[in-house]
Amino acid sequence: MSKKAKSHHIVPHPDGGWSVKKAGNPNFIGHFATKQEAVAVGRRISQEQNTELVIHGLAGMYQGKVEIRGDIVSAPDTADAYRADQAAPA
Image (cartoon, rainbow, N blue to C red; front, side):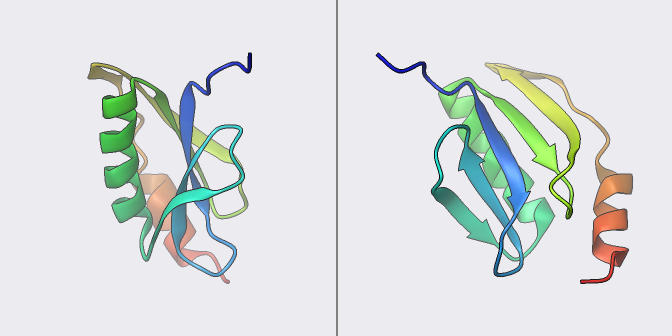
């Protein structure tokens, strides 16, 4: 039996914008124009499925995580990282 994924990820989409992915699954759950939209949907999905939400930057590097176990117990301030991503050259 395969181990169930315990996290969702906010990642840059290859065609632009941002996506939500479940760990271990190559398919995207959703594609969004902005990182803020992707994070909002990712938080909802993570709350519903009781998983962590891992947030990545434009280069795919880890920027922080939101641990969700029924309620949000820690939420990194991603505003600075979001502004840096928006300012980065494409």
